[in-house]
Image (cartoon, rainbow, N blue to C red; front, side, top):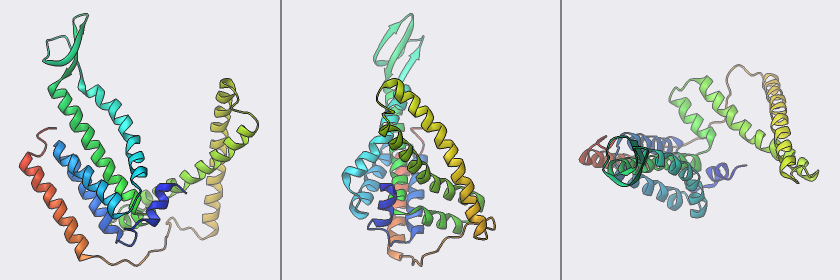
Length: 261
């Protein structure tokens, strides 16, 4: 089991109605994407981080490691936004000229890159909150109640299931190869990785056929049914979520929604 999935079942917010957590994450995510202001994104990052660490009880080190993963990719992406290249003169804060091309960073491009970076991190923090506090079966249950197409939900559930199948299969193949010195040299490593990828595809296809046969043996009728747990809505939680989203909307309106997009 992945640690993210483990925390989803063992966090302090486990007993909270999944619809409340789902609404909290999705509404905040929507505001984060619509309101193009660094202040809004920064507030969402801090509040979501507090909800994950302080309320849900997720270890801070684990959450920081999770945030570092998208942060590396975002830094590479925003660098291309911050860097401006033009033949005309630009008000560069830093730059150089090569063959009549001006390349560097302007105040506007730097602000746009910072805003994009914070907005992306804010959106990621919302998704992390949902993933770390709500099991995937409960997320699918909420989406089912929201009348999301059944085919889409079944594909989600099957993809989620096969993440663990692929990881387990790849781990067994890797251990088998390593025990035979399959990664003793660079050349051997390339060959072993190629065989691992090929065998992983074949074994995954076999697992898929076995899973479908098992579903048919259990009277599968084009719909996967899961056990629904009894939950009760909390007026206090709903009021807190509504007040927080309202505060974000007011802050976004006061600072100018989309003004920095």
